[in-house]
Length: 381
Image (cartoon, rainbow, N blue to C red; front, side, top):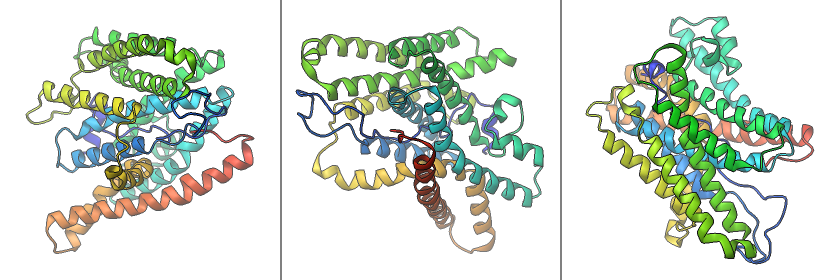
């Protein structure tokens, strides 16, 4: 099932979107900001909840529980645009941004690649040392080497986006993110001009373009959110005009993105492009709710706690749920006389447990130790 998606235009796999939150910015909010003289911009638990929802959606898709679960990837790419723009604005230079991304992605990735390689090797599948070593670099998609786990395709999509940000940082234009947003939207539109049946490098270019509208949407949401928190007289005077411009651009991003037929490439039974577009639209509306902080009712407290946990472990969960998860599922099916639903639930819980252990010992403790030793200033991402 995982390998089946290698031939799709990247529909249905969980991407890497960095930490789904915002740590304190260097400068405290100005007087007159949304939170008067108070709280700094901090981690958004709502984004963690959305990451958790997207991770569960992708899991359900791969285990045949929800046919539109592949759309979780769209939500993750929107969140990625939001978080990466914030990270870029808080990075001193391109090298700091690059190092932070490496520290965020590689340690857990290396461990998960090794586990997946072991699973496939001892299952007598066709894997070799060369495939393993190339996969460790995250460049397998660009080098034409088979992925040990089909879900690794998303790393290529993320690094294309990171590459654009790094170039702009190197050119000292990170603050001019309007240019980046419009450039991404232009590329996304150009992808629509290419026929779906194109092959070779043209087909790969169209695939890369198909998700850029989502990254640009995430960047737009971050601009809206940061403007609200900064406040100031300028915010009061030009809020309506600036927000109108952002919303119009956001609508353009939605229209461009929904012109791509993502589900058709993975041969979803009973695929309906209108349903797909409707779900993507719900994602946009949900992020609008996050921007305007409408989901802050006390009744949401426990949902946010559970969702935040799911969001924080979503990266290792994504890397483990396909090849490793399906191996666990198959082993339990063979060795335990229990209903399929119990096998699935046990598989899910075991993957969650493994993900939590990796999150605590690698993403939190190991990464923080490395950052404190080698980086003079901790990254906000």
